Length: 105
Image (cartoon, rainbow, N blue to C red; front, side, top):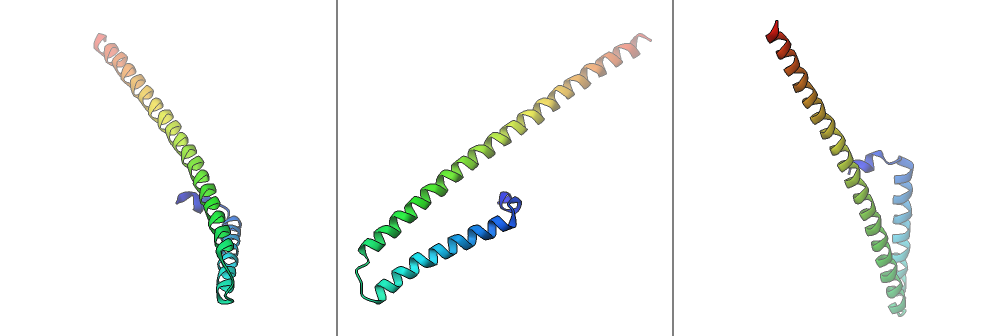
């Protein structure tokens, strides 16, 4: 969860507060309706639909973030390994040239 450490603190606090307040409001409403003896079928359906939508939203966001992270990791891996391999090949070629010159002297 390194990405969470890089997120602005104010954004993390705002998200936690909004999600916390919304959860308390939804669940508090359900508890109040239940205590008053009201029919909670429609309210429970609304809660279920809302949390399903939020689950899909967070799942989609997570998918996009993971694909982006995988692409970044792949690019970094390709660039680093490609450059190191090219540099190793160049060093080996220069070493052969140097050995050839020292052998002729």
